[in-house]
Image (cartoon, rainbow, N blue to C red; front, side, top):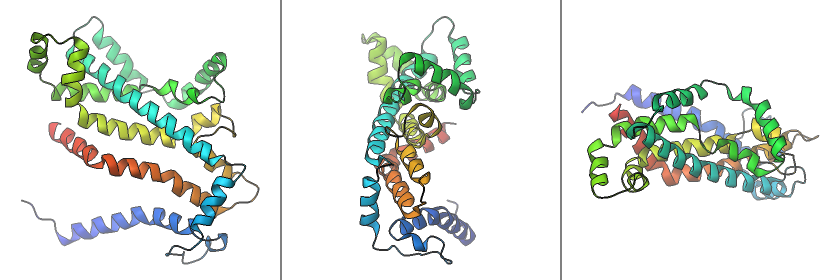
Length: 273
């Protein structure tokens, strides 16, 4: 077994401190008043204003922060579940089923990954206008129910993780195609599904540009709520940092709950590669 040198540990510790310090400083400032924001050196210990700042955050009439948290939770949850389900289903089909035009359809899906998201905002916004979905939550959910990256990722994983013999055995036992997917393929794809679910949840939770285009300030996602705080006439940095700290908490909870499975999926994928 290879033993790491002291220099390796020192490098990892320095990288860890540099990564964590901005988040820690943000939380520390969120528990203080505005007069410490520009202090040099910056405050390193939390203050006693945290509960008061959080109360002011949810009471702010311009932020609609509670509504933003609820909208982001609904959108991220629905998009994550839908993406994992449809991407794993399509990935199984592309990896293990035979049908006409399979390679051409896969190339089209890969091609969608090459188009910048910004190029699709205007036509997508026009579709939302035609559907009458402006300022409605489905406008930030429906266009992202499945992604080309998710389909390609699950297809690559299913190609290696699911033996053809297992599928043939399930067919002999009388399983339907969907039964094979649900009982045989999906359990085998669980590590990759965990990784895809985390990435999808984080991306949807942190999405800013599309909700800004299609939602109004009175029906925001959490990122738009923080943006409303930043655009106020008076820059209340402690309020902004308090909002950012609260907005980060759901991501930390998701990672803590599913972290072991997600890291295991990444490592398993690396070993298979």
